[in-house]
Length: 219
Ligand SMILES: C[S@@+](CC[C@H](N)C(=O)[O-])C[C@H]1O[C@@H](n2cnc3c(N)ncnc32)[C@H](O)[C@@H]1O
Image 1 (cartoon, rainbow, N blue to C red):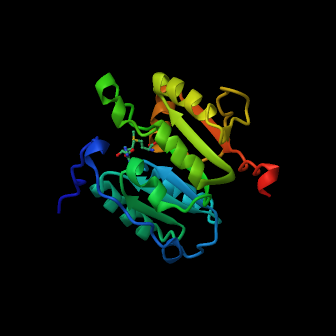
Image 2 (cartoon, rainbow, N blue to C red):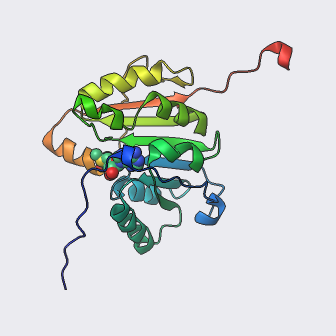
């Protein structure tokens, strides 16, 4: 019997993925639905998703991934490991992020090594856009974490001011400051690979500010 993994495309043009997904009933998905909910956007084969779910059984973790064969593989891995606090959804996160999660419902959103789409004419395919940052801001709860990592410095230079210029986010490490190392945290597949090569990695962790209080006249 062949042990070869199914062939999967390395990149899917997100602009061509126009299927919508409905808001799942997360209460049916997780064994303990009241736990804090975290999202790994672009989870690929699920190394971080599964590692995080195993490391933190008191949170629920959802991976979003645009490639269907990879989603099947991740579903299989979740079932084989018997994880009841992990799930994966086939979607284009740029289109469906807001439909998937209720406002203020997320404890953390991870974007690890988003596809850089190097060519200028492909930049419109990038995951982290002003509209995506708005969507993350609206779905994170106050104090929620928005973590972005990339090895591609120009992408980091674009994303950091975008998030820090957004009124919903603050950088607890100081304006423009990268996140300090977090010993013991689960590495992503790409992160482990870049670390093994000694590549620089740009890591940021922002915090969702509390919602602004309404002006006194509206109380
Ligand atoms: C470079 S890989 C990084 C994988 C993983 N986060 C890591 O750090 O190892 C980027 C992943 O994001 C997925 N992806 C790209 N655009 C997406 C989108 N709009 N919605 C959902 N997933 C997307 C890709 O299919 C790919 O698996």
